[in-house]
Length: 105
Image (cartoon, rainbow, N blue to C red; front, side, top):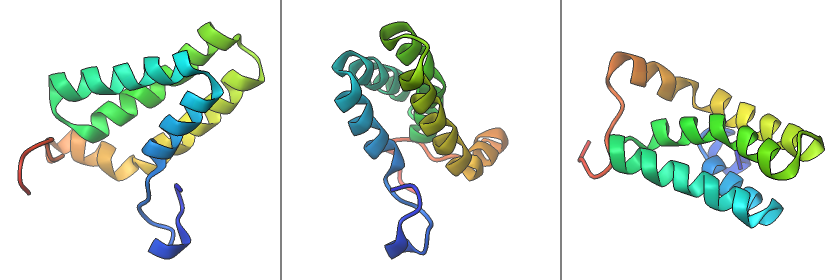
């Protein structure tokens, strides 16, 4: 879902898919990640910032909840791909141009 064929390998629903994977891997891991996203979204009102912070936190949660083995490594790889796919959002955040949740474009 990070590289969808139907959208010429651009866009996608990688964050939503990752949330489903984390919930399936361990419900507490998924809930901790969801709580991080919701907290960041509530405080800053920026979806991409919420996703990026959650992607950074998820491997730590995985390591603490599941141990620092293969599961944490897999979550780290998933997070790295999400962060890579959000590189344009990182540039917009740095310029202060990223849209806010609930605000019209």
